[in-house]
Structures are given as C-alpha cells and as structure tokens.
Length: 307
Image (cartoon, rainbow, N blue to C red; front, side):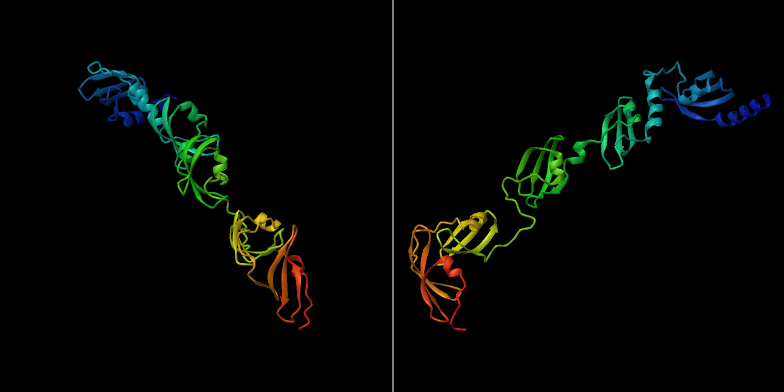
C-alpha cells in the first residue's frame, strides 16, 4: 500500500510542478514544489510564496496572496461555475435540447435551444431541471403564414400571449387580439377582403327566369356576392348569386321593354305584364308558329313543324 501512495505522489509531483493557475485575485500562480496533496508550494507572479497549500485550493485558484488580496471571493467561484456550465446541454421538458452559452451568476445564464432561439436571465436550477421554455416572442414575431379565407400572406408582428397577437396582412391591414392558434391555422379573416372560396365556380353564362317572368343571364361573375345579370332587352343589373338562383331580381322599370330579342328559336317582344308574369309575342323563326306566351311557356318544348 505505501508503494502505491509513493508512486501516486511521484506522478502528481511531475504533473503539478510547473503548473500555472489564475488565482481569485487575478494573478498567475505557479506550483514550484509538491510533497503531497496537502502540501504544495505556490509562487505568485509578484514573487510571494505560499507554503503548505492544499492541491484543491491551488486547482480552484483560491490561494490567497496577502500582498494583493481578492476584493471579491466570488470571482473564483464564478470562474469555476462558468467553466462548469458553459457548453452544458440539457433536454428540456418540451423535448428540445438546450445549451448554456453564457454564465453571469446562478440566477442569470443564457440558454440557446436547438432551433436557434435564446433565453436570458435563466436560473441554474431551472436550467438543470429542464424547465426553461423557449421565448415565444422570438418564435412567433416575424413568422408568416397564408390565410385560408382569402389566400393572403399574413405576418405576426406582436406577441403578448397565446390569445393576444397582432397580425398584419400583405395589403397593410392590421388586426388585433387574435389567438396564435388561429394565426397558425390560417383562419384569421381580413375585414377588407372578401373570402375566396377554395372551390370557386364561374357562373358566367347561366340563365334563369325572374319571379316577374323576365329572362336573365349572368354576364359577369366575381364572387357569390358580386355578379352582373343581363335582361333580355340588354339591360344589366348587379345582384347576388342567391338572388339570381331564387329569381328575386327586380327589373329596372325605367328601361324600355319594347325592343325584340331572340330566345332559342323564338323572336320575342314584350307585350304586357300582370301581377304574376310577363307575356311576350313569340314567333318561331323556323316554322312561323306565333303566339303570346309567358317566359315559362317559352321554356316548354316547342315541336317545330319545320324539321
């Protein structure tokens, strides 16, 4: 057993003699003699020699020099803590890896997540227990997504909480107090833009009969809330798709109804109107058949004699 201890002392003597360490007062100190782990001789850069120094005190830099006392004994502790924690990696409770990149004191370290986000003023215990959460302001502010309602790009410009974010659309419209889930799902509406249906249909060319018995044709279709219909005499009117489907489109009474028009094989001209229907003088351009018919009667199949 003594032989083992002697051999270890010899190895430590070779290792420590000549080793330099920065003391807590900022000076360089060098081991000039090694007798045992409890008996080292250390010389400071100003020439002061300290005898009977513990090995751990030398390694930690806590050996005192009376010629230059350390004003703050926490300097050495802070240096040791910096060396210990900077570069340490911990897996957070949210599953992300985080690394300590800066150490000021036990209540103020900087942590960087593997997605590049950083958190400052984090406690060491909070870091070691994996309780650090990523900075959601850094995560969401500047993030962009597409609105499912109108196809516009929208950007999160302010984050105050999960139910209070400010969103800016690419046309400059800003909306407030929206939830982050609505932003991520793209369901925030732009009040200045109408919704664009994912399965938008073009109803241009469709025809119908109004409740008053007039023929109308869709000549321009923008969306369900904005379309233009044309009456058989060429007059136009803006309406909605729902009103067009129901036939609930009033005729501009100030317009001239006497101009003839063609519908299928008929040459028709307005004659009169009662409370329910409008009637037209109709003549088949193929067989010459003529009669006074309502709009609905004109839609019935006419068996033309000229076949």
